[in-house]
Every structure is written in C-alpha cells, then in structure tokens.
Image (cartoon, rainbow, N blue to C red; front, side):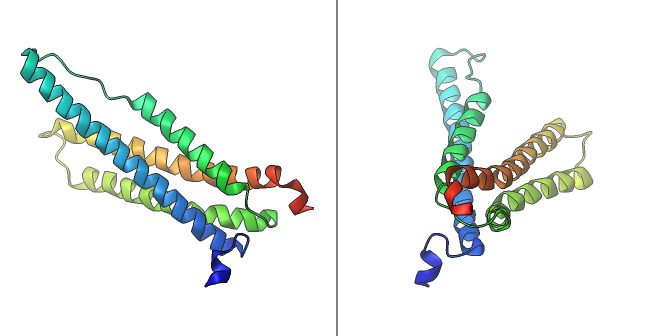
Length: 166
C-alpha cells in the first residue's frame, strides 16, 4: 500500500491520483454552481419582497464561473503534472485514467439529454427544451475539460521536468 502512495509509483497509481483530483474539482464545480444558483435565487426573492419590484433580479454569472473553473483546473493540473515522471506513453495513460471522472459525468449528462428527448413532451413543457439545451451545453463543457486534461497534463509534465525524460 505504501508503494501506491509514492509519486511516480506507476502510471496507473498516478492516474488514480489524478482521477481523485479531477473528482474533487468536479465536486467543487457542482457545489459552487448550485450554491451560486441558490444564493442568487434567495437574493432575488429577498429583493422582490423588500423593494416590491417584481422586475428586480440578479443575472447568473456564467462567464465569471467559467473563468473561475478554468483557472482552478489549470492551476491544479500544473501543480499535479509538475511532479509526474515517466515516458510519454505513461504520462498519456495517467492523463486518460485521470480524466475518467469527467467522461463519466459527460456520459451521464448526455444520457439525461437523450432521456429528455425520448420521453419528454416538448409541446406541453417549454422549459424542457431549455433543459435539453442546458444539459447538452454543460455536458459538452465537461467533455472539453476531460480532453483538455488529457492534452495538458502530459505536456506540462514533459516541459516542467525535461531532465526526467531524457
């Protein structure tokens, strides 16, 4: 067990470490997104009740959240990849194994979209159409995060430790 905990113990163990990191990052994204959504909904209700203005609302900060997520992911991947060692193939295996949480979430989101398309009544529920688009877009962003992790982690590891790969 102690051998598994060491850095550079193998591409599979490093990949599982990266999968744990990516799972924590995905959890952070989910919690911050729902927390922001809930906080803004409560703040909008409070503004409507205190001011009496039913037009008062606060827009959802999608660009800010996307920038926050991108910065958080890149910093976490750089800090993780700087400690990796191994050949190009081992680093690629580590990145692929580490990105599986993103691909699992992506497949879950796309399956939700398919479920809504197959069993949803689009004539009766206009919000269902919006839900399909939102789920599809979020699933695509998750897929792009997984692909970006697969591309960036080996490149960062190779560039930050060139003497380890000679």
